[in-house]
Image (spheres, rainbow, N blue to C red):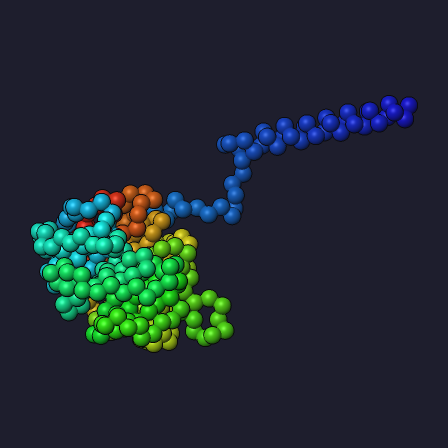
Length: 319
């Protein structure tokens, strides 16, 4: 009898387990599963109200390179890097210079009679005819020079691999470096989870550095002391979305920021204080989950988007 009771108990237990499994499957199969209140929804981030789009695309310059990596503008010329080349084109798209390079360039800046390009662990310096006049190689193996900006005799480099900023002199001497810590006891300085790490100087000579892991833009002295910063963490179009943005930024005449985000690609305008102004180019303008474009501006306030997926320079102007 005792053995029979055990069998009955096990049979009842088995029936209960089967009922629980069947009930759980019926209530949780696709179409009947309750929504997850903690799910990170990205659908709304692709949508941009039409009234917030302040620019229109006016021209498109097709480039003769496959992998576009960087762009800057000086006067009536665009300097564009990609593949193992530097190309200089007029604003009408006419080719002025096409130079083969010893390494794949990741970014470009122009100052005086010199062109500076960052690579994996070096900086290439060219004259205006495209001749290589110097190559700086005093970097670590893990270095990744992703941005260059120049003000007078100060050449600033962003190293995404080592998460720090360098200041160089024109002769290739390193004058300073910093990692974005406000004090020595701060755990984190620049948080750079990807190969997107940008810096720039506005027309007033103010040095700004993107801190993508903090969704921030930070203002530093030339010796690396933090002067101020702003962040944009709104959950709508006003904020920087994803793990680490902005990926790139540039300045309009007068000091407003133009930013470009990776992931859900979007180009926007902000005031120097960080106040959102509007959208330059909405996600619908780009290939979904495409490569993040570099950006630059000119003296007339036009925005140039170096689109690697469409292999073209896309020009946006205020409506």
